[in-house]
Amino acid sequence: MTTVAEQIGALLGQLGAGHCFGVVGSGNFHVTNALRSAGVPFTAARHEGGASTMADAYARMSDSVALVSLHQGCGLTNAATGIGEAAKSDSPVLVLAAEASRGAVHSNFAMDQAGFATSLGAAAHRVHTPETAIADVMRAYRTALRQRTTVVLNLPLDVQAAPAVGSIAGLHVEPARTQRPDPRSLTEFVELLEASERPVFIAGRGGRGAKSEITALAQQSGALLATSAVAKGLFNDDPYNLGISGGFSAPLTAELITDADLIVAFGTALNMWTMRGGKLIGADTKIVQIDVNDAAIGAHRPVDVGVVADAGATATDAMAALSTRQPPRYRTADIAKRIATGARWDQTETEDLSVPGQLVDPREVSKRLNELLPTERVVAIDSGNFMGYPSQYLDVPDEFGFCFTQAFQSIGLGLYTAIGAAFAQPGRLPVLGTGDGGFLMSIQELETAVRYRIPLVVLVYNDAAYGAEVHHFTGDTMDNVVFPDTDIAAIARGFGADGITVREVADLAPMREWLDSSPTAPLVIDAKIANDGGAWWLAEAFQGH
Image (cartoon, rainbow, N blue to C red; front, side, top):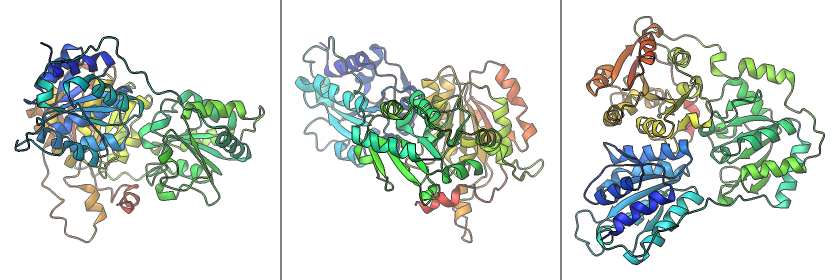
């Protein structure tokens, strides 16, 4: 007899689910084994919160639907922060959440799982009966894939155990159709573009699949290119690429964006982070926002033209509508030279804050690590005062080389993110930038990286504190956010990883030997960092709380 649990696993494998992460308990034991039998790779995490963020990172870096497998009740609640992060980030993640049997109101595991999922911003679905199981799973998977959203699919235990009904033969789900712009909004966009002198295109998550089209339109229309943080690396090959727009921006990038007379947002929300609370928008700057989600248009600030359409289709149609002879606008030789020599933070002169033999400047250790690492890498970022350093000083090869799980602004997601990204991009060296607080909060998953033989580089910016709070709440007692120094390298070695302590840049020397050894275990770098007085982006960040 084939059970519904086995049928669900086989169907999801047939539909093309990319990878499953989870913690196995009694409620999800059979469905997880069924997924593995169907060819879906499974990674056993040490905590459900780790599993859900790993899946989020995998979905972002592979551009495919990722799965999470959870026990009923407490397994779902443990995964909450990762599910919330994925939902806020429009990640195509399907959470398979076992659920207490229908009517089992006195079960210790019983709870309103649908209401809980909805409160996190995820779409709540359920496999209602054996007779509807195939349709219920198809609907949930289709929602995750086509709407690029996070779905919690609740699987009641009694339904899972029941005999399967119906056949899954030949079932599949097609991606969503490309949405083209309507003629009126396209015309308004093109008119603003032709009237502009200094246009800047900013692409976000919704622009990541339209690199060639957006770049071609920028070249035709004379626009500079930039990205939100989540799309870093998208325009690396273009000489008019400004890098990240927002709080992380180098001074020249901020200057050129602020001087723009037209900003065109391709699949980005233009929120307080990307626009520095509006400071990067000039007084007379026109704004065009392009997004497949109608509700996203103007959600964070008024726009002059909203285009509800696919980013690539809009760029393609705009190229066809533009007059054939366009002036260079912002793409001049002088601007290209300025970008080549000043659009990066490592091209911006800063004071070295290092205390020789004791503490290293976070910028200097980041720059040296960037020099040592191979080009083919995937960089993950945890949250905290330090986060601008790895985000801006560590290069990535393209948009699939940077994983930025920051929508919920939770610390402690970085290690999970790095592991999920490593499985999505197995040909690249995974690298994590994290603080001591976030790393210690999630350190159980270091064992997962060791167990799966992941050669993960972890740079811990260790200031023995929750640095963001230390630098923000000046004048207050810091007893609750400052800690004794922790030997993180020694702890890492206890997990089976390699660990080194860095108090000056020269202490990174062992990395060369590690890189040359074809490593199969993580390397944790405990960098004792100097006080930066609060990172350059921090004050603006706290304004949004």
